[in-house]
Amino acid sequence: RPATTRACTRNTPKVLRMAKRKLAVCLLLGLAGASAFASRHVSSRASSRQRFSVARQYAPEENAAAAAASATTSTPSLESLEKLKWEPSGTLSWDFESSEGTHTINYVAEGIDKPGTPLVLIHGFGASSFHWRYNVPALAKDRPVYAFDLLGFGLSDKPLVGYSAEIWRDQAGKFLEEVVGCSGAPGGKKAAVAGNSLGGFSALYCAAEYPDLVSGCVMLNGAGRFKPTDPEAAAAEAARAAVAAAGRDEQEGLVDKLKAFLTKGVIYGSFFVTKQPARIEQVLRQVYPIDNSNVDAELVESIRFPADTSPNCAEVFFRVITKNGSGPATAYIDDLLPKLTAAKIPLSLVWGESDPWIRPAAADKIQSLKPDTQRVSIDAGHCPHDEAPEAVNAALSAFMAGIDA
Image (cartoon, rainbow, N blue to C red; front, top):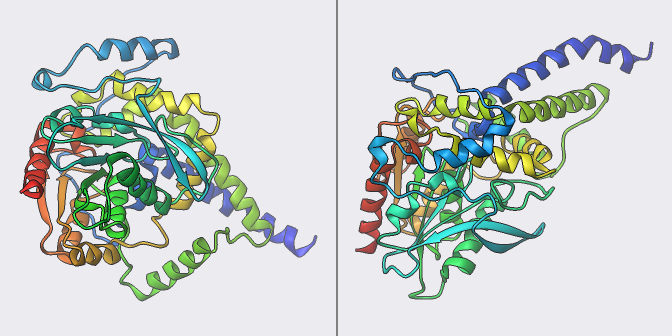
């Protein structure tokens, strides 16, 4: 047999094993996929408080009805909080012109007539602006508050483009200019940016690269990569970055092409499993480990609906995972933090200390790199703004009051 055929036959079991491992990772990460952005070079601390619950079962025809019912109910402890209404048809829209074309972005805005410094909220992987449902109304009592759906997520367009940290960074920067009205001119308007998980890194990246538009930055269990310190890891990272920066996959030979094909297959498969309501709820309950009472049918529906109504969703999921699953190749947290310091942009970490995905050690590392970073610990998991909204609203209000002053 030809050498290439023998090599393929020899390596096929190994490739299949790798494919199965990738599928397991995709299923485990589920909604968080790119939250593996998080620091694999930072030592992790196990959470002693993590709890798991059995997910409710949903029949397909029950999705909309369950979401509608949950919109009229609330957890007793949150009865006093106003909440955004889930709008499957969208709320406000804005045309984002990127290097890849023009895309329609869904967003919400409240308190636009208020005098305080504007605040822009950026959601995490798989979520949408609706994930800030308990935060926008409360924070908008004092200031303009905006939340938009990242390109490829929620009710924003899902074009088949090259998804990267840079496109979301620029989306945030242009949103500040064109929607919020921020200006880099002397005395021009500025806004604070805050984000969760992938959105936390997007907020940091935006603040670092658009400092004339930003007055403060908050990372809520923010994702992101740190520079590798081990020489061997650094060499591997440099090689990976070079390939990614060239905009091409390093696929040479039959085995590599087979591996790429299998990888795409398992990621597509994981997407179709992950978007099922019961699976969405199961994953959410894992990352709301202290109080999962806010994992309701309306939140599940806000994640399921966009995944079921766009024909591009599976391909977008694949592109985001393969491009960003190990973190951005062109930006490290280590390099961005000094830019905030130079621009005198304050940074705050509002951290769910029981996060099973992005451990508190990541926040510790950020503080060690930028000692003047503020930190508020929240008794919650990966999504503290929705699991413990009252505590997060208090932390954000205090941070914003400092900027107003």
